[in-house]
Structure formats: C-alpha cells, structure tokens
Length: 81
Image (cartoon, rainbow, N blue to C red; front, side, top):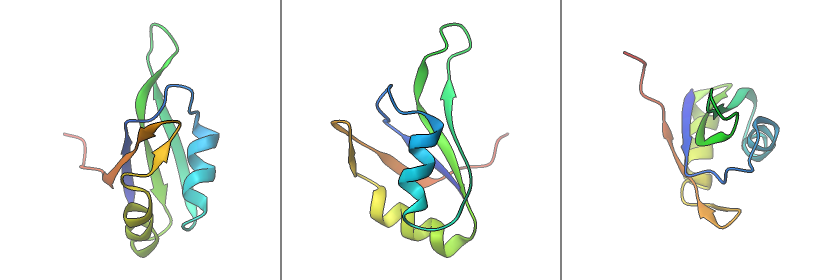
C-alpha cells in the first residue's frame, strides 16, 4: 500500500520517515520529496508499506501524530495521472 505523508517538518529526511513507519509494519520504501532547485524538503513524502493491513494500521496510528511540532497527515496515496 502506497501512503501519502504530508505536513512533515522540513528537517525530516527519508530515513526518519522509514523509521517512523517501520514501527507499524514492513516498509518497502520511504521518500521525502525534495525541491529540485533548493534541495530542501517540500514537507511531504510517500511510504510504501509491505501490505494493506499494515498500511491501514499506520494510517490509523500516525494520521494527526505530532512530529517536530507538526501534525502529520497520512492517507492512502492516489495514483498518478
């Protein structure tokens, strides 16, 4: 299951994101999206969970969770168009 993770602190990197979600199941990949011009985080990312049950558990546990003073937004990612 592919998850969208928004409202991340700009200091969060992909390793931090992977560690946070690994507490709720297997993580295939975790990526914080970076601005091409500045190299800074854009404040959101994507996490690929190993299965749908673990993905739903992560959404339930982490949506609204405080990370670095910001409440994360976690939901199932919509397919790219």
